[in-house]
Length: 476
Image (cartoon, rainbow, N blue to C red; front, side, top):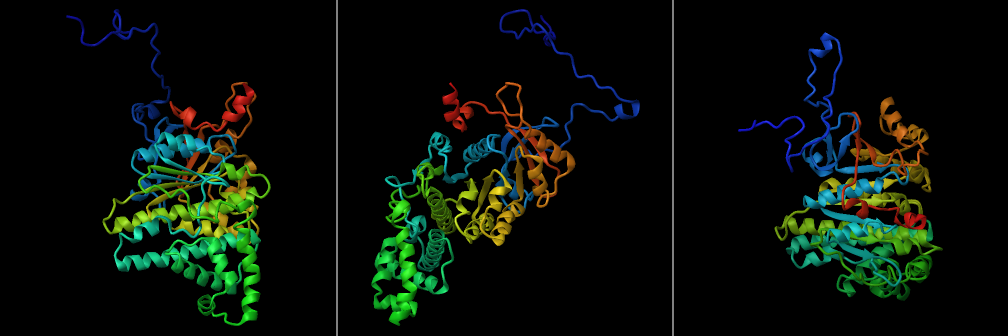
């Protein structure tokens, strides 16, 4: 009978795992005082092991995992918001997609809240999710649509339905005010806001809860007695003074580059049962003149529409009409929605503050603090920097030293942490074709030491996560 333990090089027959060489074990050298406490079989860096496996700790080799919702449940964080900052091309999207794919597999619903480059579509379709492509001639979103909240009304008690109706009206008015401020590049006056609120309420009553912007515009142009009375503007001179600019602003939302996107009923509602939903804005982003304004308007509408979906499922779950769900929202290239005019940052700010109550984790991603510093006013810039401060989890990919100097004013970074992130931003001319910082991230959790992690893609991730396909195709 042979030995129960195989020889070091394996048994000498087919399929026995025979190897030609066995690497020697690791040798340790130290003084007798140090060696007395050495146990090479225990790793003690304490990398988090709850969540989606991201990769290996760059110092200890431990597996690092991340799930902002699970970390909140464990009391490791105070909120599930994440802020991701890094140079273009170093793997920010791959990080988001790994987290997206893993959290979808564990039951969370994925919401890509605006995809200007159409880079999430392959992954969402791979997961069997829903892709809504916005643009002239494509899908449209009615900013005044009650969306999933409206669909939930019939299933709620009269008391709960009254609360939802009030919430829907508030959301409609807030989004319409933001869109008006965007197209006119300035604030809406108090008198105009009061009139808009009355017009939206009357249009909802006439259209059985699903008005459109052209219908609101028609009411303001006609000036019927019920609207004048509700708006407390029975004087003809005051009415003409208030409605002149407002009518022109609403017209801009229905014509020009915005025509066909926000001036009709929602063409493709969000599927309440979808595992993942992505709003493809690539056709809008490539529209040429006026595309920046259109992208900003589309992102604001997408945020409102998607969060109405989240609140609808929460309302139904609270009454036992459907299971409670958790969400992961991706807000990529956040700056595109904030630069249009002053005050738009408040819309994103309100979203980030409510994620914990909604059972939703949010990832805000951008390239540089310069993106936020380009906002119109100092107040907007301060609020935008607050996104980083309020996000319990900060993730830094490759960044230059100049950028880290500014980040250090918001997030405390040690000298080794700064040196590590800066080293990833160094250019490489070795011909290997891989940037030295690609797939490397520093995860900062409040005042804890940063967790450096290296992520390697496995099949089918290289295909699903590829954002360089167009460039590689030209190179070939």
